[in-house]
Image 1 (tube, rainbow, N blue to C red):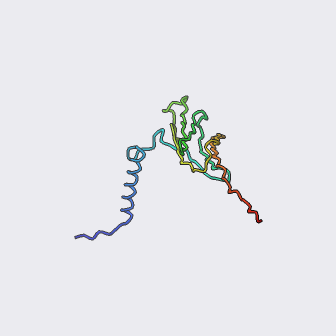
Image 2: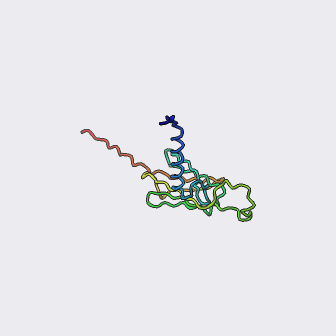
Image 3: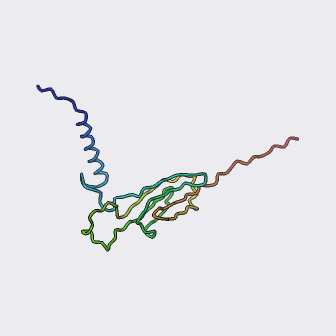
Length: 147
């Protein structure tokens, strides 16, 4: 019987291959296949101050008319599409690294958001959505008169 030396890196490599196959299945693509058109999501920053929660989404190359922001119940949905320049034929490209096609992002909103006052603006390829907070009802102090 031959003695085989244990190599932990071989097991890690096997685990990495299994994870890659699972992720390929999750993205609905064949194993090892590159991402296709329409499989992208814009990057977002979400932060808050005393008055509002603010979402900034990177949408370079997306026409403002192709952006839709909608609130359904307590979920905010951002939809849109980045279209590829139709004047250049696909076979004339040397490299395509940017993603094109439709996208959608959704975010669960906290109860403290005033949905009636939400504002969205797009400037230099950055969509800024301002979600104002509801005014907090402060307890009223009642003075007690001493007689």
